Image 1 (tube, rainbow, N blue to C red):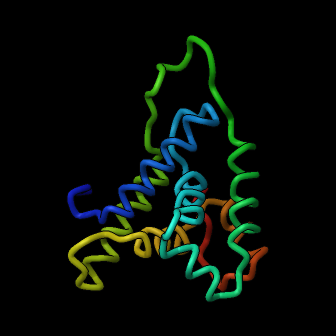
Image 2 (cartoon, rainbow, N blue to C red):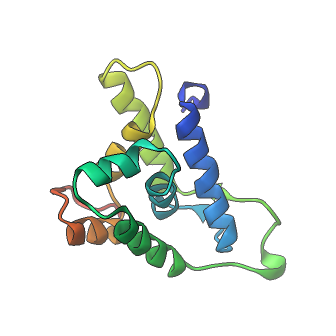
Length: 143
């Protein structure tokens, strides 16, 4: 994965996902963190897409945040301050986003490529959230 091929908004989403994970004392960035970052990005494309699809950005963001709050957290001496990892699911998501950008003949990986990758292969928690809002994803969730 080449982060130099990611747009500024994509990099901002990754940084925001990291901040959300750190705020909740999580050891790694999960798909939920990344989806939440995309859904709440100021002046972002994904919130605008949700609006155009008549999906309440607030409702879906709240559902994703509730899922984030259920993830295990680590505090104390077992955690290195400020150090966080990317989960294998997120790594696969970012690789898929890069592949999607290449297939679409796009030079850069944008937020829509990342969101498409999440929608194509959501983890079980996100899969349930997407089903509850009515997305037409038939992909098997990654477990």
